[in-house]
Length: 397
Image (cartoon, rainbow, N blue to C red; front, side, top):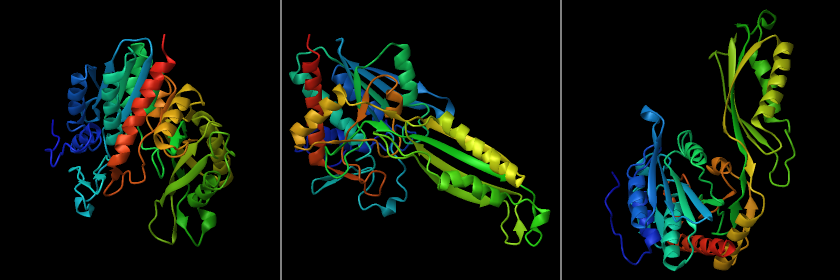
């Protein structure tokens, strides 16, 4: 365990805030857990959770994860989160040391303050409070990974596979991602777009630019191939999602001079797609276009696809209603259901049960001097606790 020493941890702060500070002081830059899972396992064991450490992958790809379970009732509520954080960049750019978890003027600073160690601290604290007042035997499970910010191969995806094999199937799950936009409670994510990346290499015939008839320019072909990515509308969206978006993210050729038609040209692109498509239908559509252009320009091409994120949506129902009621009660705000943003581990959990994401304001996530309001941490804790009590009431026998 290599969490950094506790500094200025004052009793005036709530358990949730103090736990968040402790977690931030674990420098768990992905894929290292740096003591964060050890800390949580200790806290949860003291709360009578049964903890199971799950490690997946080999060598440098080995990832530590934690599954924890409390209660044995037929009703089953889950929370999920990740302890890994993105790199800090240059520490000299930070006004507040990234792993000191300093509090100033009601704001907690540090890497993971927004995304998403405070969310984990809030749901652990909420469960602790719920345990003191609930008379139910509701089963509570926690799905906590150390592999969300990187490749997300040996994290929640593998935990979900393990849970399915064990027939551990929650009724619903909240992922504590920082979904709020401007104020806590203004946004719930009930779906996410899929992600498909392509690396396209076009090979022609090298030659002198003054004699283009003696060459085959792969760059011209590549530009036309990318037209379907950069300009053509792939769809118009639907009631849950906006239109699919695509962006070219890199371009290069085999030549670094201006008087040579290059032998090859390469492009990278990413498509964020909605439920109007699957990655299979998108790949088929794009490859058909690439083949047509390659034939027209008499060039060859190679394409490498990468995707580990399919789109999903959780229909409005019991989970979104419970969340909305608790948020309205404790913030007086009516949250918007949204599918904006990037991918998250909810895309894996949707294979187990209905899932939604809700957490703190995320406007500083991944930024220098990442921060959140400590007042909001306590509000989030109260929302999570209220959801658990509503879940109990909804499932009384």
